[in-house]
Image (cartoon, rainbow, N blue to C red):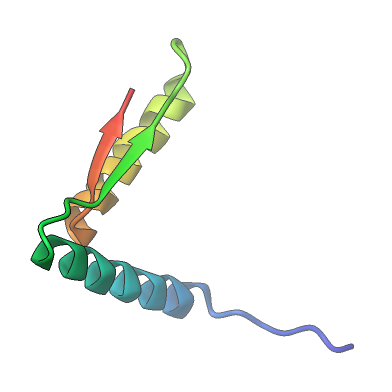
Length: 67
């Protein structure tokens, strides 16, 4: 079975567009889409990852809460 090449940027763009549409649909129904992220204390990489996800959440309309 031959391998299949994925275009990462194109795929990420499609996922982002789908997420934006879903978030907008939820907000139109009065539902606030939210993502909860739990990171262990003293984990700087995890904190960086959480901050990155928070920024993405702002772009796609999903409230991201990092604990």
